[in-house]
Length: 219
Image (tube, rainbow, N blue to C red):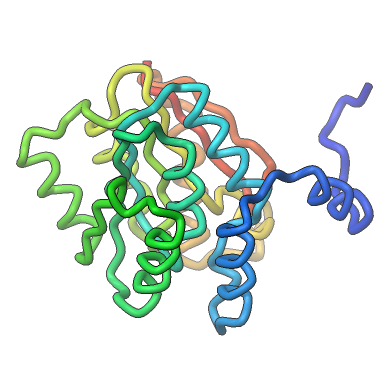
């Protein structure tokens, strides 16, 4: 037994990865993305598996994602959805999302993907204006950090009661706990962490997986 989370040494992490179930299509996507200059933007495979499990546990059918990059998280979730499931994926970069499209095609998952290339606020506003309020089961926020608080507020309107919002980078490489770090991104993530912790509309947990995954279930 332990009163705190076990430190993840290189040996422990290697052991953990050995137990991760990662379909071949996801492994190849991860390996291709690792060659890109911005590869650090991709989530870890154990986080992808964890998110897929959450989606399965919820029997989710409609999902929303802000920040696609090359699509590892998007495809992880899509693979966990039923055949008639849908993930609305929002990003602004056509080059990176073209990789995501290619792997969705390989995985025969394109029927589950609604990719919207526009600033996330525009896509969220369009969904709200179209009457999609309270229609999503799961939402993953992993876009520009400066807008995390407003993204959360809008996603909370789009998620049904009992739905789940997952926010990536909630630990921000440890910067959130350092008094020496005071840039806008770090301040915004701290603000969101505090806001969710005191938000009576949700039940929450900050899970130390990847770079920290903040979970908020709408009551």
